[in-house]
Amino acid sequence: MSIKTIVIIVVTILLTAALAQNTDKVQFAFLFANFYISKLTLMIVVAVVAFILGVLVGRPKKPKFDIEGYHDTIHKKEDPNTLSDEDRDYIN
Image (cartoon, rainbow, N blue to C red; front, side):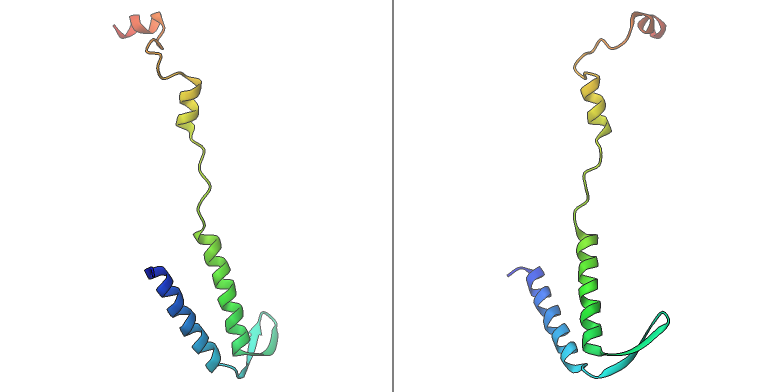
């Protein structure tokens, strides 16, 4: 078993224990509304939202545009004679 799997199992057990102990109803205020909701429901909603945000943030990024590769395909890198005769005279 990998360390990642063990951590996921431990976090799941701790979350399940916390949810099982918090089943009473509490007053919850959101913006201008006040309502009663069980701690269990609220904690499950927060856990699901946190998981979704974690997946979105942790996913691989899209590859960036390779401007150097694009430039190299347009201007052949193998061609050593890229300078004009005027440029060579100016350099020498």
